[in-house]
Length: 84
Image (cartoon, rainbow, N blue to C red; front, side, top):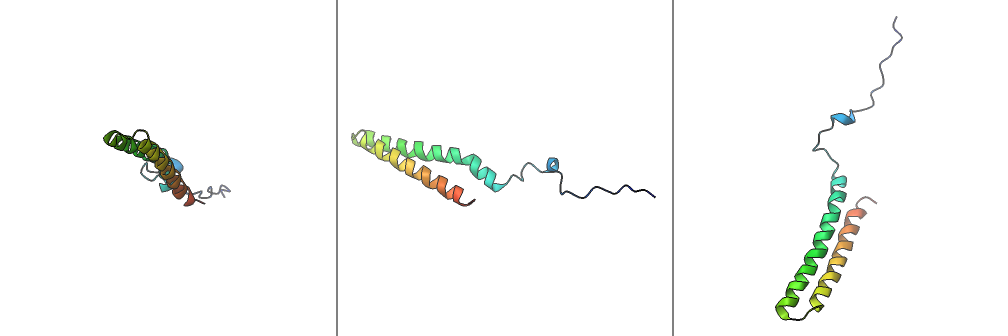
């Protein structure tokens, strides 16, 4: 009689995962930095463009930066809140 028992099944082999099966949460956090940067730079650039158009420098640029910071914080909070 052979006393060797098979090893218990520990689930799928992690090396056999398909590359497209990355968790959605990980992708969300990986793209968070880019999303925050685009919101901040985009709103600041929009404020700068309005300043150049109206000749009111630096007021709309500052408003754009402040709105970009607010947008970045709100985006970050909404993405992180899903995991709390």
